[in-house]
Length: 429
Ligand SMILES: Cc1cc2nc3c(=O)[nH]c(=O)nc-3n(C[C@H](O)[C@H](O)[C@H](O)COP(=O)(O)OP(=O)(O)OC[C@H]3O[C@@H](n4cnc5c(N)ncnc54)[C@H](O)[C@@H]3O)c2cc1C
Image (cartoon, rainbow, N blue to C red; front, side):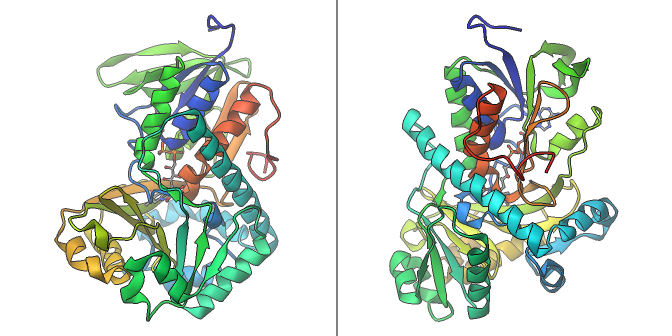
């Protein structure tokens, strides 16, 4: 179990953006690392085709005070949120906790904790780029949050005031300044009331980023084992001793380990349940559509968030990604055509000059399950089983928080003090 350097062997479960980044952080600290995933490629689940935004200024959880009213008014087949009847029984316990956390005192604390991690993470990501040459269509010049209603904008400003600005450095723009920054918005200037520019924000292809993380980790000696399902985490005397792995056409085998980091997204609760650890993570389905642009000049370069329709856009070279929607649909990953159509209609409304191209293109539709906790912040750090660590439950912020979560975990696993306080970010609360 102990490698040549005398360091410990740590297995990270999950080669999504969270697990792959964590594997690199652990390898950078000289540990012997194995990154394991049940798929035969990196980032095959939620990190595959997400919105592509690094957005610490949007780290506030979704359940702000008054969420019940907003859910009722914005839920349905033509709305950004949809609660499917079949999912209701499995949603009740989590849903009640989600609503409980929406009380102002709890909500603003959670929002501050989540933003603190996201801002730290943006700094870690910048440092990661200084240490490694990474290719993932990175855009590092900020993003625009668009407002089509004065009331919505005032609400957002009030929310931000209450959360505080722990380094997000928001700048309010009027319509003219907004269109000057992103000319693709000129056709909707008459509906816009303004925007917030988030200079810290970035974008890129999270799937490519996860593969880059795994490549860099492998360069430092990490073993990457794809196509291996973790069937069981092996524990003796309340201490992790390894894993039981299986896979298509592969006999079950044991892999010894001194430590295990669970970064398995929506698969995390099932992995630790047998150890008596219950993770309150619900899979909230989202959609994305990606198209190749024949006229890139008409498309936005700056990543956009349209708060009215709740969609985001990001450019990866000549490809445009559109993402949004939140469906409570259990673990069902099926792509419902009417929901994809809603996303596309919303994008056409935001970007009318591109509407024809969006509608006539071969759009790659995709669904993914956000691993959401009722509080909003992820669950990081140790468990009561020695050597078992959690790095999961990042909800709608997984890529935004991946680099910071990886550094925190790597510090904890190697016995160093984490660089930011962990309160509100652990299983204990
Ligand atoms: C539509 C949409 C848009 C989004 N937009 C953004 C955005 O713009 N910015 C942002 O920051 N976040 C965004 N998110 C959220 C973000 O994508 C997720 O938070 C993030 O991908 C979670 O990463 P992860 O590594 O924890 O999980 P995953 O990417 O799901 O990775 C978990 C991995 O664990 C593996 N695994 C699970 N169980 C096992 C097992 N038993 N054995 C072996 N392997 C296992 C899975 O195969 C999987 O590869 C979006 C999500 C959606 C759905």
